[in-house]
Amino acid sequence: MIFMINTHDHNLVLLSLMIITLILGNCILYTHSKYVNHDDHDYDHPKLHVVKRRIEFRIDQSFNLPSPLPNWPPGNGFGTGSIDFGGLHIAEVTTFNKVWATYDGGPDGEGATFFEPVGLPEGYFLLGYYAQRNNRPLFGRVLVAKDTNSPGDPALNWPIDYALVWSSHGLSVKADSPGYIWAPIPSDGYQAVGLVVTTTPEKPPLDKVRCVRNDFTTFCEPDEWIWGREGDIDSDEFNIFDSRPVKKGKQGSAVSAGTFLAKSGGGTTGDTPLLACLKYVKSNATYMPNLDQLKALISTYSPKIYNHPKENFFPSSVEWFFKNGALLYKKGDESNPIPIEPSGANLPQGGTSDGEYWIDLPTNKNEKERVKKGDIESACAYYHVKPMLGGTYTDLAIWVFYPFNGPSSAKVGFVTIPLGEIGEHVADWEHVTLRISNFNGMLQKVYFSQHAEGEWVYPPDLEFYDGNKFNGYASLHGHACYRSVGEVLQGSNYIGIRNDTGKSDKMLDTSKNYEIISADYLGGGVVIEPAWLNYARKWGPKISYNIADEIKKFANLLPGKLKAKFLAFTKSLPPEVLGEQGPTGPKMKKSWDGEETK
Image (cartoon, rainbow, N blue to C red; front, side):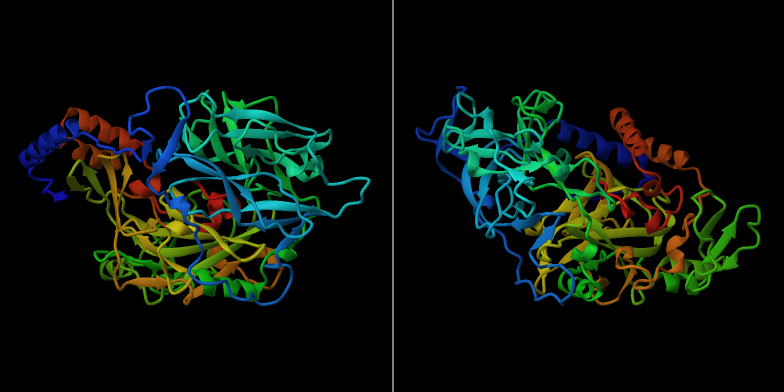
């Protein structure tokens, strides 16, 4: 239940907050066990807890996209099933046999399951096993390899032995059976890129997996926490993580094999070094989608982005914004702003965000208010296409422009407090990124930008419609993008900035009204970047009111401890959320050439 209160009635605010504080201080969180042992008693000893029956987990079901993949338009190597790393051919496998599972621990306490990849293409070899949390349907991939080098210098080689990394034997782990995790020990000149899991203490056969020659490998690091007790890479506890290359971004040459890392005490457990990621020796851009294939991908996957029913500030095209009176200001000549050409051709190109120039709304009051509201009929999805993870995946970053970002609201307990002008600024750039496998054109995951950060979401957790397209939701006034309808609190669980989402008839279909603004891997002349994309300065002015005073005014309505927590929270917010100044354009963001920010 949410209460809206009049922030000018200080006595009502204080009374409400005192009641809320008492409620929050006396809340009791209840949980229920998902596990039942053979004698229906709680587990109370440090032994393996054999589970005789249990509640079904989401991972017990495999996930498939709602519709089969289309036949992609012909051309190059995109969607052909394998990629040549320079004598080492890599393919993607998405079918698995369950080996071992644990039913507690991990981010949500539901445990994880470990799988052996099966159904490998002819001539390909396994590099390691796959692990996934139990809290979503099975949806994963691992890479397998085929050696086309000369027999005298093979890119793949058997391990010479295995080292036991970890065992559940004698530990307090809820599982169907004991579990053992093994690290392949490579011969000189080779690296292991994955681990093996068994349910017996006998070592796996040497020919179960292959190790990879050094020049086809590079450093890996932990990514998403899969399972364990703490999830801290520096913890002494044993933990399982997804792996990712240390060097990421558009220029990166490496990709994780989709296998998992095991870490304890700040390093890999056992006597083996950190596992490696795969790296291409010879780059080949022909596995990226051509222009026709890009259009097919956009038609297949691109989302509808819904605005909240109470939204006042809608997206528009950049051209509409310029045509309707946006002005370019120059430092030292503020009294003579100039109209911006519809294409942005008269914007200064390049440079840095140095404060020399900025864009603002029309000076006429009525026109200013009209332009603030945007024009969803003209709104356009701007696509930036880039190779990722050694060119094995394609990122489709969909940028949406809003002429104005509206005011924020804070939530303290059950009370919502409008924050006046806080959060307001001219211009707002938000984006959603689709990560596509170049092996087969499969949607792997989606990134939803949310102010200065965001989240990766896997397809099982998307809201699909019309085949393999999905929905996104722009938050009220702030336009951060989320995968479902509801409220997300930016902060702690009882104090923060509200991000409300909802479905309305004000929607942008990013598969219809769109423009590909950058895809430099296609070569010169295929995609022409608009002039406004290379404008490096701010798309809005620095605000004129004192944010510190505004925050203090609202903080003074709160009792002592809540006031301190509220002030501490506001200091953690990025400038674009606070509304101190307008943002830079898409090309100036770190994610343009790099990985998305979590």
